[in-house]
Image (cartoon, rainbow, N blue to C red; front, side, top):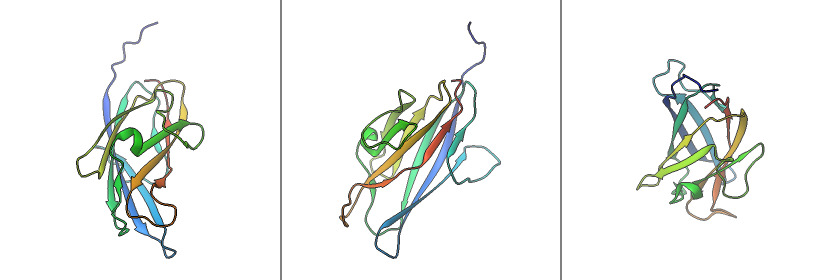
Length: 151
């Protein structure tokens, strides 16, 4: 059965802030909003509703840690994705994600989320290079995307 619903491309802006904790570790915080939405910035998992639309997610790094953080050079190194649990190796979430680019300053990561069926929770790990501290780099942050499916 074919669908007459047109697939749209929507944009999600994600601000990733890195600061230094009292113990010297890097602390990450993410806020996101849909481009053009009146909902404003939101915390927590990125929620993509059920429907035919696909999403371009643009992650902007604001490094206030003093560790000179930057995304890894290639998008597949800068972000690991896995359905259902935290990733420990490269992956695209079973084909849900297409890694598009890391900008030349390595402060912006762009990906495409196809939001395909079935609905799922994508666990992703943002990965950063920077000045050594303890076991780092890589410096890692592991939030979630709630895919509604239907794309």
